[in-house]
Image (cartoon, rainbow, N blue to C red):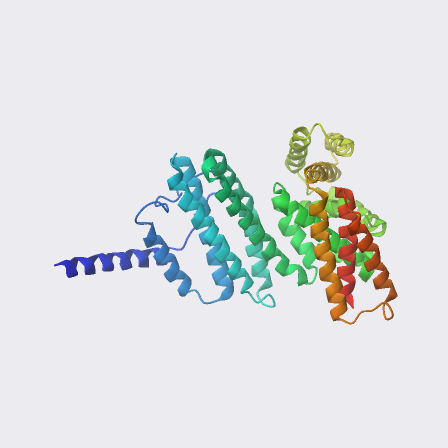
Amino acid sequence: MKKRIKRIIVVTILVLALISFLLPPTFGATEGVSANAPKILPANPFYFIKEVGRGVRSIFTFNSTDKVEYELKVADVKALEVEAATNNSNDPGVVAPAVRNFRESVEKLKQRFEGLELATDNARIDALLNFFAARLVKHTAILHNASNKFKSLESEIIDAANSLHKTFITTVEMILNYTNGDLKAISIIDSTDSIEELMRFKNYIIMRFEARVKVSELSKEAIEESIESLGLSEARKLKIINELRERAFDEYLKSNLSIIKTDLIKTLELNGVIEDSDVQKAITEAEDLIESIADLQIDKARFNLLDAQNLLRAGSNAAALSSAQSAYIAARSALEELNAKDKASAEFYSELKAEFDRLASIARSRDITRENNTAFYELLEKVEKLVLGVETYGQANAAKRVLTEIEARLLSL
């Protein structure tokens, strides 16, 4: 009798697992917990059946890109499990296993991305990274809400958020060796503006692009072609151009981007493809950000915002959109600098010194010497002095720029 009961239980579990296997995880709702929110959560004793089903599904998913897509969907569902647990319970014991499950899923996703062959299926990988970026902001907000509600779990939830952001950065770094990989990475990260760590990462990639333009001596036409190759909407293309122009220091690059931007605005005004609603949305985003940091000296951001409002009233929608985007970018830059002031100079030095040592080691391994490449070694000496003298955010950025130029020169040798 006992054996029969055990057999019934085992068969039931296998049937339920099979059903779970046959029903793929669905992408979650973008706002709040919908009617399709997960009902069986990790604290439920029957939750293991869902995990068995997922395991079976994973085993029978053979293509490496398919595995990434599946794990990305699973991570999305597990984020919604954290959200449902947070909203439906006041018990930390219900939320804690959901947070742990989500973090484990993120770690598994990282492994799946690392197992990809980037030489094939690049368009599909780009689509997966864009989906990851879009959901990243939602997942971060879910974890933030859980942390606010359950202070006893704050440390564990912060660890999960850090793991999520590092996994995203690691996966985006994989495409930097694509043709125009730096620009592609910038366009993917573009939707994650609210996450400070990712904004610092985007700034680094912009520096890489700036160094590539300088070292490779890219013409205006080559820069424009690189931006066109991203296949972005006109509004997003304009935003990328504004982002690059506002953050770049190299006058050659800034000048060419200004020409490209002016030509694009003329084309967009002529074709009338920018709607009033697109401009108003960009203005509202800039207004909200500027208002949130009203104590800062952000005259440039305020001027661009006023310019956007005037241009919209005058019917110059493309120019208005560009000014609103520039206002937002200027305000973000001010906020990033403010946040970086809390960082000790020792932290700046440690990060920059590690990068300097890495690049110097690569140079030595390639037998690059002062005798066979004097200009390169003069650049190394210049950045070493900059790194040793770093105390402020501005000085750290100056050192980073030279380091990215050294990296670009190493890649070109």
